[in-house]
Amino acid sequence: MKKIEAIIREERLDAVKKALEEMGLIGMTVTEVSGRGQQKGIPLQWRVGEYRVDFLPKLKVEIVCHGDDCGAAVEAIMKAAKTGRIGDGKIFVLPVESAHRIRTGETGQAVI
Image (cartoon, rainbow, N blue to C red; front, side, top):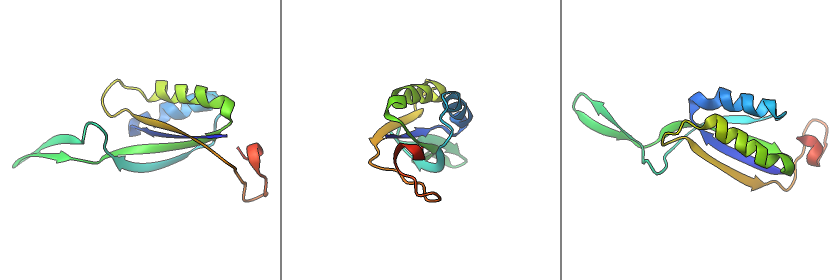
């Protein structure tokens, strides 16, 4: 099993969700986060001058999937989240040792 953590623009969530649903990946966790990357924030103009917003709002989408589905899921997220501008986000893939469903006590791949 693999865990995919995708940091995306807020406005791309619906497109990413739809792309994953089309693959049959329904379960996901979405968290509002803020951060900065190579762009180091954005400059904004205010009445008295310019200032920089260092941490920009983003969404973190977390999905656990079978290892066989991981590559296709990453590609679907990349295609759906891409705008071609700086700040489109990042995707991280991590191994998952085990998974447990609290309600039934199931473990392993049956949980996802």
